[in-house]
Length: 142
Image 1 (tube, helix red, strand yellow):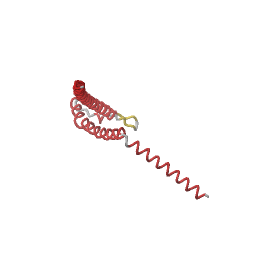
Image 2: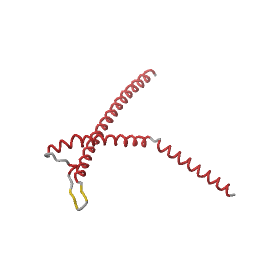
Image 3: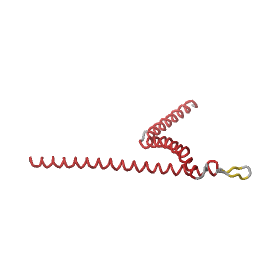
Image 4: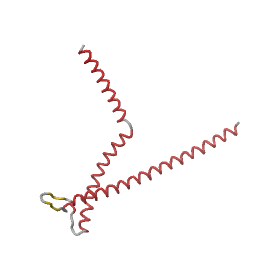
């Protein structure tokens, strides 16, 4: 009797596991999830590029303009704790530059998308004109 109950529970658990696997497969094969994954990976790589731009090119130039100031060295001590506010300033600058770059990229993609939509509308209007001409010729034949 106990073996029969264990066997039935095993079948139910296996059925639940198959249902979950199918649900996961359906979820992962949606286009939005794949697009999001690509966006996250590309965003991470883009963030590294911008961080390098900030740390290796912009911040040294800003430091020279500010009399050799290096933001990452800015800190003060309270007892045994060191408050590294220069790193915080550096992170704010990174965030602002990354945000600006993303803003520029989104605007470019929007312009490209609008241009593609206009081209599609032009093609549709050409097709509509052609179809109207065909309709008119068919009416004349009758």
